[in-house]
Image (tube, rainbow, N blue to C red):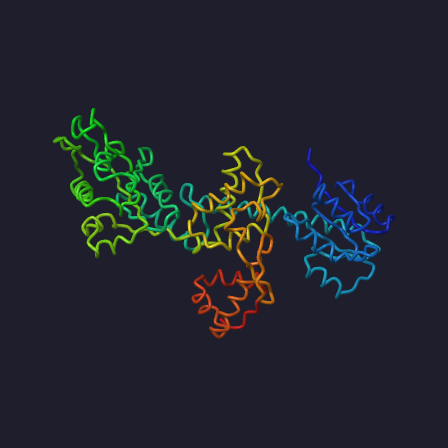
Length: 457
């Protein structure tokens, strides 16, 4: 049985409330309220899909009520009705967010048509959002999330290089998802049915790393009480991922270079040559080219590793992907910790999108986990985020600084920066986008969001 959509009628005249309820209750679950306070209480108890409110509700202002309703995290569709109908009033109501406008006495057929159309349009919008998510998911490599231009370029590189045998050097700041990219390359390769083996080079001393990679024979060194199979053998037929390769000792660099060149190696303390059928991927947060110039990393190994370079961008360079990433982490963490699936309030999402994320995606994941574990409301708000995000200061429209929880209003900061950049660039949007370090498309989105007039191109 299909669940009925809910409609809330707000009017101070009882006969109007009762008449509209009688007309709509065959197809909808209808609630009524006689004033603004009653309407908000009803919505708190049972959120509605549609609110039909009078412009004048006794001493209450219907426009103000509508604006309060539309600020809710999941706002209903609002339809305004009034006996004081005029074109100016209709335009103002719709400018403030009303879906449409009807005059009293209400034409029931028109009102029913408006409610049906509004609900259908919302369903289509929801379906389109879900479809876009599915399209993004379908075109992105395994377990990688993003739809921004910068991430599309990363995905294109991964898709092109994955079927080959080429070594890939994945560079980027800590927490940008270098290992996730390596796993995506492996999953799209012809080796995907074989092992993916990861080694974090910085965690091991040179001797231990050599043994970890190539294995050792019994008695090869003190404590080697039995033969050990190394990671190159464990990854046979598959992919070996060397993370933080910039940290390895020169003596180990030489042995890795030999494997890449000759496709063979020996275990530590052994003399039997073992063939290597491994695809090598490496990652680093260091500038290997600079290390080569400084003499701390072998140039020949660098060239062997850097056949295909792949740079993972910092999160601040594709902040438009934060809602997608945060949404995925919300589902993951809710399941992992046995918590209900909740969404972030618009204010919390603004905080997530505005933060600089020095720890990148890893830090975002930790922040979402923090909110999921400690949040107690039906939604996750700013107060549920880590301290670093709660304490961001904001600037109001008058340029004055405010601080403290709940004072976040970074949209004003962004609007001021965009206006300043446009002024300094003579209203040239291309130059302004370059000055701000964002794409032209991102600038256009912010111009529309903040209502900033666009004069020149």
